[in-house]
Length: 462
Ligand SMILES: O=C(O)C1=C[C@@H](OP(=O)(O)O)[C@@H](O)[C@H](O)C1
Ligand SMILES: C=C(OP(=O)(O)O)C(=O)O
Image (cartoon, rainbow, N blue to C red; front, side):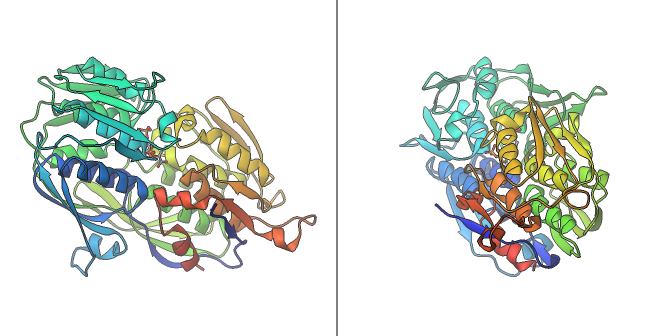
């Protein structure tokens, strides 16, 4: 077991950092590259375990994928993401994948499992998908139902609606599907299967989830349209496709990873931190809107759009934060940031309410439970609810600081990172010994799923 000890910060966070590439865009760039004609060149690829699972799955289906060491480049995205990878995906076209000889291992990655299922539904060969213990408990009926309604043959081998999933060849037709959850993974699985259908495929979600798949499919040559209605529902429609064509993709830094550093710089007094090249696609940027609503001092510099994705440098200065309510259509735009937002809420003045976030229960862990357990352990008054939580804040001014504790990551990367930031603010109580002044993050290695250099970047800020 990998235990990381984190002491309270003794000074503010300073300097400039670069965040590794966006995980969602990294997955999609390999997937679309693999099923396109020609080579897709990706810069800023996230070398996290989840994205490496996606690469390994496509290699098992005969796709050649090369990792090229980063070199200096005139491309501003490439040069500012020097620690992230440059990848060449030698695509074989829509029908060029070959049958894998073994089970496709999707590791800890829901994105890999669900999006890949959409692509595999349209293949002429059978495949078996399975992941780690956490992944194999996550709900897959949400993709099996619409994909099977399109003519796919996906079966949950244990009959529990979870992976392992056996996918047999089927011939796909059009569908107008309404999803009860705003999930980019469900939407993307259906749209990717739609590439192989003989009629248009539409998917409607209750509110708009991240739209990287739609943006990237369009840039690879697919005919796709999207609409958001006055009531917030959003529909994306894809037309049958003959072929996609490889592209150059410059991946911006992952806002979900940047969120830990934004939170740290806001909460630790006397901080001024520049975070370079963060993706700020509006369907992902709910975290920034909530920070602003809580009173955060954020300045956007060098805003630009590359390959259809907005990005910006963000200058963060320490700020007094105030409680807020996080709900409704904001939730899908910040779903992965809720663990760190809960930590921020513990320090904000007032009571923060998070609702409409039942999706937290079906992530790498039940994050309503894992956030509650760990905030309790550090001395915060938090009440879990059916679809969120209520957090009594003020652990900065009106109440005693959170105290150091032994934190279980529960093997959830977002929990491990969120509580690493909480640890910077924790102050030992009179009853705690000197040895207990550090917070211990158990099984911290799970952070490698999305941010292998997290701790070294954090240390570089002090
Ligand atoms: O499409 C994606 O890349 C993702 C979508 C979200 O999941 P859901 O679609 O299940 O909400 C998010 O939590 C996950 O980290 C990545
Ligand atoms: C939920 C996450 O990812 P995935 O669904 O791809 O496992 C995450 O990164 O927080």
